[in-house]
Length: 311
Image (cartoon, rainbow, N blue to C red; front, side, top):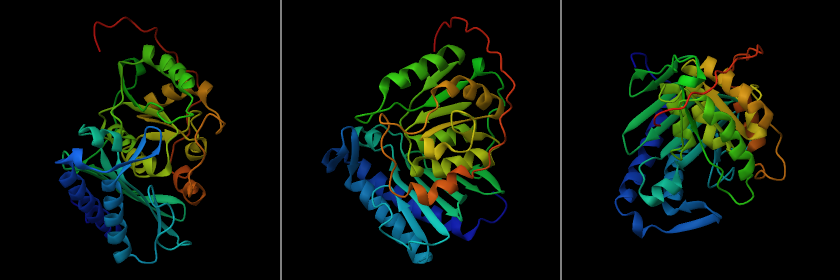
């Protein structure tokens, strides 16, 4: 990246790399880790806590007047009413990490007056650093990111995430999958939403959709996508994806086709969704204000899927 980085982005990078080093050390001896269960299938380890503590310490040492919204400590640290709010997931993909599957990351975003302006997602297993600054582009290890050029859903690889918490509506998700699968080239589910969104920005996926995500899962990735020329919104194609806890993203044309398929499944939070997390209201504007181009409302004709020889 030839241009100089924003000072706040530099601090976020330092924080992410510090957390990544903690995670990498712990990954060498995963079997000795202390694992707690927040809810059935929702795990947290001492590494999540140590990584989050290191991130918050780095950020607040540099910017003591800033607010914090973090997965494990919520809003308990930092200034409560700052214009600046750091949105942190210290280890996105904890279940993968516990099992030794090397697909997880650190996600850090900075929102200023309700808009995400800086973003870092760090994959410590590959030493991959995704960064974005509002209006200045998104990068992976100094290489400029652009979303995929694919325009047809039938040619597209789509990322997703499965529901896993008790009370999640599994049947609704299976119906969504049934709607998308016949129309695309394949669906993948690695298990880290923050990385998945970066993979859309990098063009590895052509699109992505998931329900039930928290602010810290999507804050950094949303800026990566828009800065890489992609679109992100809820299932009806509007920017209000935080409140509805549903996200669809992709290259512009593929995004439009996914929206068409997923619109019937869009709904406000109901009894079958997990309750809103603490701090959602604080960053609601940060995510709903992410720049999304209006979706064309012209009907998109989907070709009838042809049988494939393999996936």
